[in-house]
Image 1 (cartoon, helix red, strand yellow):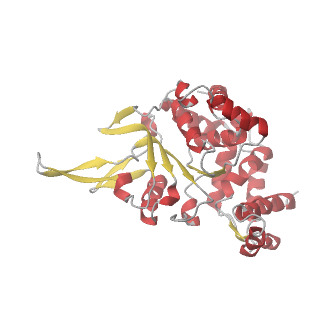
Image 2 (cartoon, helix red, strand yellow):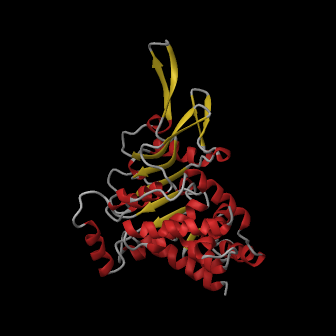
Image 3 (tube, one colour):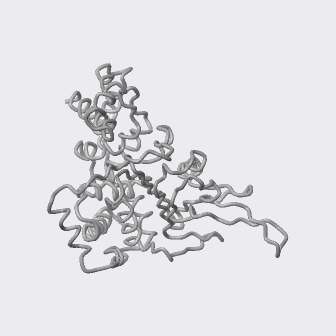
Length: 349
């Protein structure tokens, strides 16, 4: 597989996604970039803006229907698994547990829904912290231990990937448990999905659903098989060039978010980005370069992914957040971070 092969399939995916989700073209590119970079994604937006639909459509395009299953080394993995997070959800409801079998008079493992190629964690902030931690630990380690036995969630040599797409509602906070910043770092990107961008886009959404009772994504046919994604990820990370001036740009950009190094950044940030954020930024930029149609990363690719990669890794200045909350209480933190990143980017020019 070469970059042209990856580019062809990704282009077809974008075309198919555009037929079932109207608008949000940049968000779709970011979602595909995160997938190519082998990164988990947190999608934030109010209910009804097609967050779940995007993930389900992507799973179908990869050949991961709800009834898809694969057995690898004696372990059965589902293609697509959806977990609805609630306050009474236990860690074992996600990872699995040991169950007593009266027939054998012994305990045997019952694997949880996390044993899948693609996992949709719906409304992740509804679950209590210990349940969230069970998922986030599995995301980081890409393996789960049950009854003293460790089971891999990712087997790249067998074409088995493991990606988590989580959703959360930023508006409704009653009965929720916000993810700590340290745990948010498990996500490669946090993609903010708002309302339709234009009047025509919103009308097209209604037209798309007129005259049918099923979801448009039910008509999607697979474009490829799951193993393709593992090969595509390897191709992107190995073949997309990252010039030295891009490494320098990313380094200076991240250092400029740290008030201890770049004092003017204190107007926007209390805590800047870590080196791990820089690794994520470069990988995401490599994937975005492929989607753009290039085999080499440019500053434009870094700038395209810098906000979704860093917006959950930066701690905004609380005084500025409070000031902006008087105008928009829900988007204040995002606004401060967006303005801060634009400020530090311009300071590098």
